[in-house]
Image 1 (cartoon, rainbow, N blue to C red):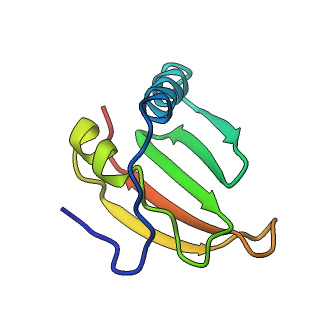
Image 2: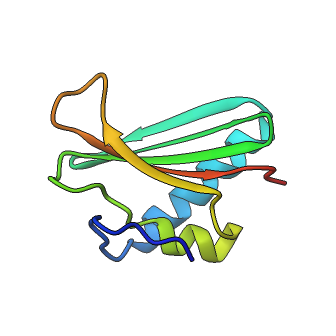
Length: 104
C-alpha cells in the first residue's frame, strides 16, 4: 500500500466514513461532479471525471491529513497517486490528495 511519509493519520469516526462513501457514491452517480464538506478543522472534497476519482482532505494542521487513506484503500483499492500541497485559496491549509484512475 502507498503510504505518505510525513502525514497526520488519526482514526476516522464511523460517521465520517459513512459520509465519505455517500459523497463518493453521489459524485460517481453524477458521472462528472464534485461534492464538498467543510468541517471545523478538516474539509473533504470528492470529484469524479473521466473515470478518475479524487478525494482530498484539507486541514490547517502543519502536516497533510491522510486519515481516510487506509479506509478508502480497503474499500476501493490502492490509489494510483498520493500527493499533498498548500491550498491556493486558503493560506495555511495543506491538502492531501488521493487519486484512483480507471475507477469503476
